[in-house]
Image 1: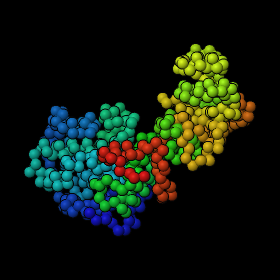
Image 2: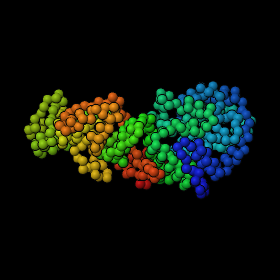
Image 3: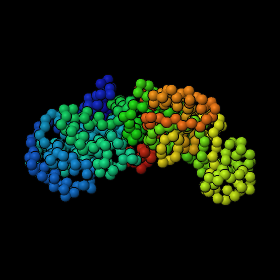
Length: 494
């Protein structure tokens, strides 16, 4: 195949021109696939008998004749239930009708960071569609109905991938297909068929954050300039952006205020309605990685006491104490049994603990050298991690900052706490915050409106039109890339 186009001045879409770009690139793609282009130019379509096709659609779905070949069989059934089993695609139309728009959009899903192979390419063939529409008398109603149903499933799959992501760990396809989610692709698809701008109605369901749209615009630019065939596995930069757009779909949010921590860039953003603040963070080392998650910060605590996780107590604190009992006192650690009884720091007691370490735990009292620093931000999560200050401020000067035991340390924690109070309409609590930090007073500051927090794993982003790549500290890109493109070997060479 030759290059798509030499000049790409028309392929620079803004955020509200999805349909224009899609139309442009798909027509260019059709110029390469001359047979399909011929079908579109002809666009002479004879009507089909809706009643016969509707009855066959209902029969095929009711008898589960092709359920095993569909990605979202329950969603497809709901689509036709809501449409009275009438065909949505195998019906009279002219010009660049919705059926052709749908086919061509699936043809170039690469611009959305998706893989063409996921949308029934062997069944949804241009020649077959052209013949079904233009020579309906040569095809039995069953074949028409199967093509119709397969195209619906492909579009529902495409929409779910755009909205949730293909590999969302919280929303696998079987969970989505049940219909117990806020977004329903089948209902949105049916509504889109009733809109004048069919393409825009489909793609508006994807994330609308600036970081996502910037990356998608950059993907389109690279696809338009450099990609010769929408069917092929794309070049490295496009693959990296596809991986990260997939991750963005997992954690899409409409919140105006939130905290986002990106692990590979070692950065925290506090997004407020009118501005954003950036902070450096330290994240988990590869042997104890920081997980990706979504939660809410409901309060923070000054001068916190630290209940040491048992793994750290057993592997780090206890061995150091056995070598030098003064280590506990010098670092303000005290040891208790599981019933809360204080255990002394004599070497004989420590040796007893060594034989049954799971029955004991340690606490570190508040103070300037507490491992949690001066402030801890609490949020519910199954990993028992938190966001906190640290006395080891020199670590923030390092470029790569994967040093912690899963928890996240933030630079300028006092500033972050103050911004949260101001945003919560509690600026009057700032003097109390400063006083508590000054005298190491343990004090909780509750937020009237909890602030969403999410940790993400984005190994690239687009800034001012340039693609910025980050190191992949946990080596996660390769496995996601293989799953996204259905390959057995990682494609990205980093």
